[in-house]
Image (cartoon, rainbow, N blue to C red; front, top):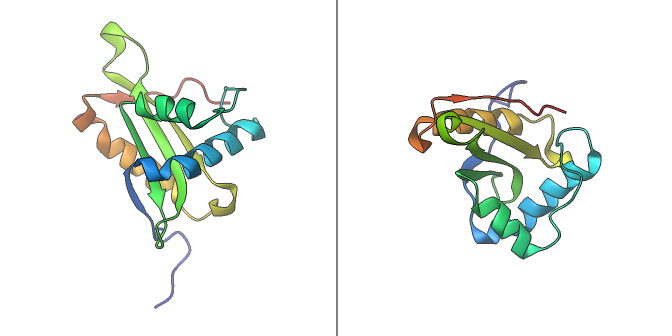
Length: 129
């Protein structure tokens, strides 16, 4: 039986690993350059900056294709500090070459499943560009 439209993509969403960093940075910077989804205007300039950025998140995860290639990612972190830290915020990025295949849906589903294990009670999007 062939894949049907809207079927789950053949990806595995998992925590990022150091070997993923180059692909993650390229995807993140591609979305930043497009200027349609993220409020940031500055790209991650090098591996050290990318490691610091992704490593500082409560959770950073990638969507990996059948052959292990990174197709997308998300970062999950508190939306604010103190008494607001129980609410998460997330950013999602999918490589332009992988869009329209359900990768974003898989990333969102995984981020929602990660909320409680990461200590969050909800997810808020407040910087939608």
